[in-house]
Structure formats: structure tokens, C-alpha cells
Image (cartoon, rainbow, N blue to C red):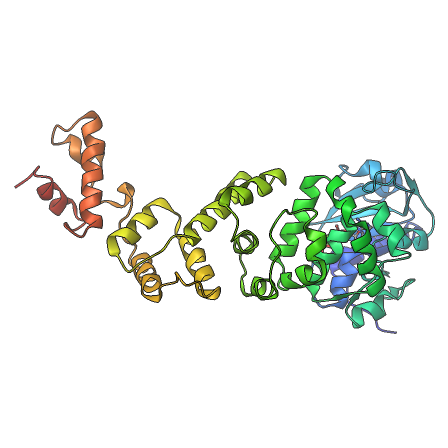
Length: 395
Ligand code: ATP
Ligand code: MG
């Protein structure tokens, strides 16, 4: 039997619980990612120890009790937080999103069977041996996302699993099993009842994934229950994977819609304000017709962050937008490389310099704006001496 190598921090936790007479296994995404040789961030351990017993076993470690009501105690080992949760069974859900009640269990199998997909239902003991009640190992090998148990029941219990399936397909480049995708479509209407924060979190993971197109190929109709957007063509869907930036992918979904629709959709999903602003700016700049005009380009650089301008050029180029101008793109790159002066703060002149010439109040701002305009038009060099002379303050 294959034995996997667990990080020391995980081994310490499993071994200590075992030494104290409890069962303990690492479970869920951590095991899946270990099998896939994929980098993992969070580590979940499941045990028959009750929360107060977990606390007692790790008394000499830093602990977090935020999740204690759900049976979870966080323990910091070698600088990493490990979440240790008592075996659980979720009692039937009434609202399609949260179990009605959580019951502690004494059997690993029960804890595993409540998990969403077979690939997420594997457990591993301290020696690195795999425990697989649901055929998860085989599904990982054949790259399939499959519900644990009856897909209709599982999506009815918790509709978030529908989005999780789509985002895992996008992250892992996995297929979704036929019965599971059918059930996802049947239950897609339940998505509108989920907390928007959880929906947005999943969407961001999905958009951020390398194979985001897969989520749309499988679930464009499903996703339209959570994002009111136009139908993407197969070409647009394919294009999603050519971008790394999440904002660009959101903009692609709203390219033919007014920017306000993108803004209101993101606001409805309670996206961070900064993210909404970035996406809206990208959408706006995308529709701007850039030309090889030095002064006009500098004004764009004055108004929009460099990243947004670069992303919009990249978007135009990859979408083969008729407005894309290669020369304008090169001009932008050159001006950015040169750190072109496009803001008052970039000037080699400031308010204090002007005050030495008895300039006061509003006049300072006016002169600085004039100086900036002169530099942006290449009428004057950006040096204090040249600017003072150009403003007729020195001879
Ligand atoms: P990620 O790599 O994004 O962390 P993950 O599978 O580890 O993916 P978590 O949210 O960290 O996701 O959850 C840990 C484990 O808990 C999952 O692997 C799965 O076994 C279980 N789980 C999480 N969410 C659900 C859910 N909605 N329904 C059933 N089981 C779930
Ligand atoms: Mg995880």
C-alpha cells in the first residue's frame, strides 16, 4: 500500500491524539491536494475526541476557539494553524444551505459520508495510509467530481455544493460526473437563496482558476442564477482561460452590457468596493479608443491606474477588438517604462518651491497644474530650473 508523506506539523497533531487514545485523520481538501501533488493551504484533521478533549490534549499549544460550536478547535503547530474537528454528522437541512443540526459522531465513516465529493472524502492516518470509503482515490485518478451519495439529496441539502463543483472543475481541470451535473442543473434555482458572500467567494475562486472556462462550459445556465449576465459564446468562454486576472474575466462576462450592470451585479454580491471600482474602470477603459497620441495617452495615465490600462490593452489585444491599436499599446508601454510624468506629484517642482517666489493659496495649485500640462505636452522639461523659467518665475 502506498504511504504518503505528511508534513511534520500534521504528524505531530495526529500522533499526539493517537497517543492520548483517540482516532485522528487528516481529511478533505488537504488529502485531495496531497494526492494531486498540489499546493495546499489549510489543513483539516478529524477525530473522535470531543472539543474539550482536543483542547486538553493540546493545552501547551496556542489555540483558537472560533469554531468550537461546530466542534472545531484550531491549534497552531510549527507556525501553522491546523483545524481539528470532532467527527460530525449533519442532520437534514431545511433551508438548502445549513444543516438543521450538527451531531457529533464516534465513527470516521459517518464524518466522511457528510462530505460533498468523493475526492474530498478521503482520510489519511499519521503513517500516511489512505482510508477511502467512497472510491475517491479512483475518482481523483480519473479526474472526476462525483457526489458522495445521491446527488439530488446532496445539492438539495446545500446548494453551495453546486458552485463548489463548478469551481473545482475549473481549478483542477476535472470532469463532473453525469448524474452530479444533471442534479446540479435540477437544483440550480436554489442558488438564489444562498448568502451572497459565500456565492461571491466561490465565484472568485472559479474565475481565478486556470480552467475557468470549464465552469462555464458545464454550468453557464447554472451560473446565470447567481450572475445576471449575457450568454457567452463558445469563443468568449474559451477566452476566459487566456487571462490570469480575475477582473478581466468579470469584464468579459459584461462586455456588451453597460458598465452599470457590471457594477450593480458586483454590488449585489457584496464584492469589495475596490474590486468593483477596478472592474468598472477596466470595462470603461476597454471601450475607449486609444490612438498613438502622446498627450491623450498621458491623460489616460493621469486618470486611470497603470494596471487597469495594461489590463485593458491586453483584453483588447486578446479579444482581437477592432479598436485595438498596436502602436498605441507600444506607446503606453514606452511611457510606463519611462515613468512619464503624469501627476503633479511626479513634477520636479512642489508647493514649497513656489512659496519661495511669494506664490500663495489657490495660485500654487494653478501653477502646478499648468506646469504638469506643459510637461505632458513636452513643452518643457521636468526639471525645477526649467519649470521655474517656463512659469516666468526666474529668467
Ligand atoms: P480548498 O482547497 O478551497 O480549501 P476544500 O475542499 O479543502 O477546498 P474547504 O472549504 O476547506 O474546501 O472544506 C474542507 C472540507 O470540508 C472539504 O474538502 C469537504 O470534505 C468538506 N466540505 C466543505 N464544504 C462542504 C459542503 N458545502 N458540503 C459538504 N462538505 C463540505
Ligand atoms: Mg480546504
